[in-house]
Image 1 (cartoon, helix red, strand yellow):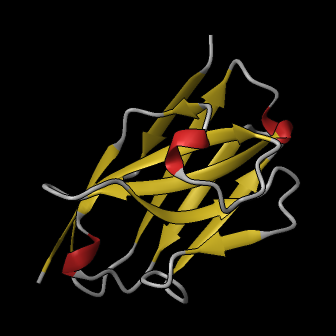
Image 2 (cartoon, rainbow, N blue to C red; image 1 turned 180 degrees about the horizontal axis):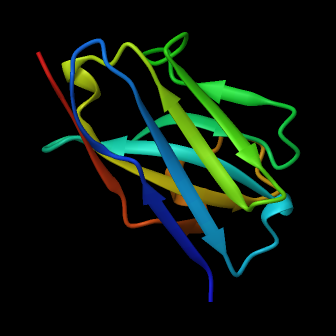
Length: 124
């Protein structure tokens, strides 16, 4: 049984930082590209960042480039999203997702597994 469990969300003031973690189990983690997506109330789920299965390539949405950093630890089956200089518009539920041998730029519907999400709230 595959499980993805996000943690690390919370409430912060603008300019603050959070580090999200995604713990995975039940899948050969090193074969999966990991992505982070977010969904704000009334909006569609949007891509935030992705890191390929070997960790050699990373991709970011323009809105988070330079502020967020995605990483992974294949030995621990974990993915991370370091979020700095947070803005109120970053407020959303953040999801991690896994795509087998993914290229890193695929849309949400092509990901194979999803976590339940963790809330991030940034106040001004």
